[in-house]
Image 1 (cartoon, helix red, strand yellow):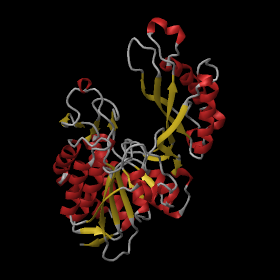
Image 2: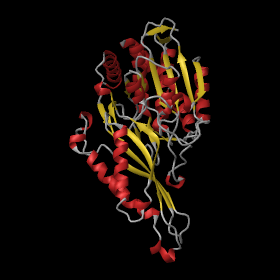
Image 3: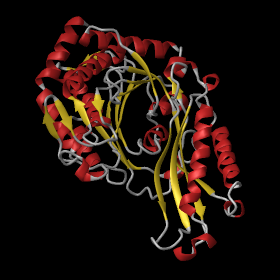
Image 4: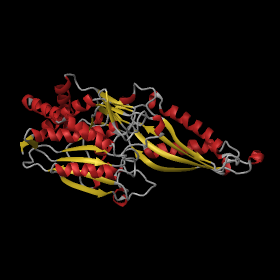
Amino acid sequence: MQDLNARLCDAVDAAFDRQVDFLSELTAHPSTRGNEQSAQEFMARQLTARGYALDRWQIDVAEIEHLPGFSPVLGPYEDAVNVVGTHHAHTGKGRSLILNGHIDVVPEGPLDMWDTPPFEPRVEDGWLYGRGGGDMKAGLASNLFALDALTACGLAPAGNVFFQSVVEEECTGNGALACLARGYKADAALIPEPFSEKLVTAQLGVLWFQVHLKGLPTHVAYAGTGSNAIEAAIPLIGALREMEHRWNAAERRTDDFAHMDHALNLNVGKIQGGDWASSVPAWCVFDVRMGLFPGQSIDDAKAEIETVILDAARQNAFLRNSLPEIVYHGFHAEGYALSQDSSARAVSAIDALDRAHCAVGGDALERTAITATTDARFFGLYADTPALVYGPRAEAIHGFNERVELESMRRVTKATAMFIADWCGVETR
């Protein structure tokens, strides 16, 4: 393995300029939700050129809405396309592997708040800047070029490998769920999300919901006779903040998050309301994201959220007779803790990644619990598949001037190549 690891590292180094070019081209595709098609077409071409069996399909909500882990959607799905490239092992003697990554990126926000355009990636001082470069197109690049390194050595994985480029990770996870529904299963999954070359041992669940408020419109000259739907949202948000504080209490934390005073974050991410500056607003809608601990029931969380909002609304003279409507869409994501998986496959997969990481950098693989969610939950919770989240260092993901450290991507690519060789075994091409 030492000799093979050295050859794999040399192969990654030899192709690294091409890998950076690949990442730049992929990042230039503005693959926000609903606009992933050009990026997926690019991925499909890359996989086909490498000889992988290509599967590209449009997600059908009817095929997944009955499955555990499904998140409700409001918009159409005619533009939601997954891409999977499969390496079929000749011998089949090795263990199988899913290499998963998401192609969708979050909106870029006001362009004038970026130093340079978000979809015109640039390389500067060892970093690549651009929306989605870190979260998580660098991970897709590391997966693909890790496989390329094996090819350059005249080898291939001895187990089947499924390279997945999925949509919907940033809002539902239904892209990964659709892969499960289509029959893609393996002995382990690796997802290179940008968490600084650490192994994610636990992740939170996430719940999205909207609160719809109705007011009583009138001319602002007679504001006292109306009811302002926007201002009515303020005490409801305050009540949700109190709930957030209760949920973070020490006695409610799981072991992985016991050391964190505030792991569960509530975020009012969007608010809309009113029609005219001189009219008391008749309507308001605000969107909320709330974290959940692994093992926390989504149904119980929804029940408590509804109670909190409606109880607060009943304190308002107008709202008590016009109660808010709560609409769930987007994330219905349960938390997932790899740390709780003591199966032989999980232990073996973690050990293999630990060896690969140590071989690249010399240090033991650091573990971390994250206060976000990833698609790992689908494999770990619903497919009995240990899901390892391990990717490069990135900064300002979901923010302005998002960037990924290129040397970190190089190290992750090397470690991934070694992990594939160790986990799947190798055969001659």
